[in-house]
Image 1: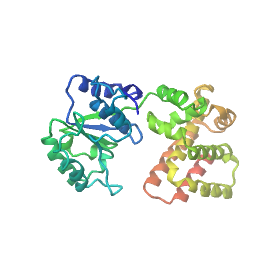
Image 2: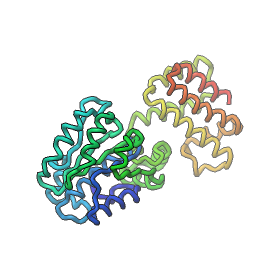
Image 3: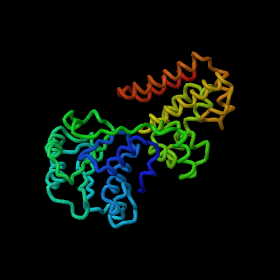
Image 4: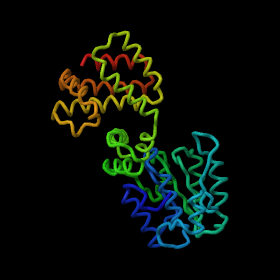
Amino acid sequence: MAGFTEIIGQEQLKEQLQNGIRMGKVSHAYIINGEKHAGKEFIAGIFAMALQCEKEEGKPCQECHSCRQALSHNHPDIIRVTHEKPNTIGVEDIRRQITGDMGIRPYTGPYKIYIIGEGEKMTIQAQNALLKTLEEPPAYGVILILTDNVNAMLPTILSRCVVLHMKPVEDKLVKQYLMESMEIPDYKADICVAFARGNIGKAKLLAASEEFDNIREDAMMLMKYIGEMEMHEIIAAVKKINEYKLEISDYLDIIAIWYRDVLLFKATNDVNHLIFKDEIQYIKKAAGKSDYAGIENILKGLEKAKSRLAANVNFDLTMELLLLTIQEN
């Protein structure tokens, strides 16, 4: 963890948090709303460290005793709320770790900060228990609720918190980070950026994932040769895809990006803006085979497949129909 400068993008959110510290107008409760892996925990950790920093510069110095404790997750006044049940934060979790603890003054720092990750998992009872603390917080109390679904919060909770929404990070900033900080090659960075859609945490995970590389290779191999495949080969391909059932959304997204490349090349005859530019000979072949209506049918078929899978329609049947749609168009 580092300072505010290490938060990529999110300029408005950073400015609001930093101004609160500098002007002495720190709220007693914040909700940070953003996609999974977007960096909510990272931001909350930096903000908490800055609030407790002994140098009081409005940013964490990362050198004082307090900052070192925060960096090692050992600060006694920065409490990360835990929960035993994986999908639920219950009323007892909130009572034991927040409402029953906040009355005790900070041990060393000026604040006592509670970070609630996966805030959307709080039950209504848990939120109501938290509400009593939000209504009459001690001056030193700060609660940070991190969520990827702000709509799961009760209106009474929302009205008592400063709600900060994370925004998608610009593609060029995500690519720059992957290439400079993670030393990811250009072509791979482009693919990760296309998938991440402004979520830098997801881009980092994809860049470091061997599983994602395997999914990408298999999906691309299928796209290259699906035009010549017999029915028994399509059935075999579906069985292979079954291995990626848990990552099927990524698999379908790879195919969608492939056909967007095909559509773009067909329209412009330009390689430079393609994601899979290293596969240009196959992109060119697909663009020559399919007309615009056919490519549109394939993209619609991909969306239909996602909807069917979300509705628990038979996996093999859904994938067979999709592959036949691709082959026919």
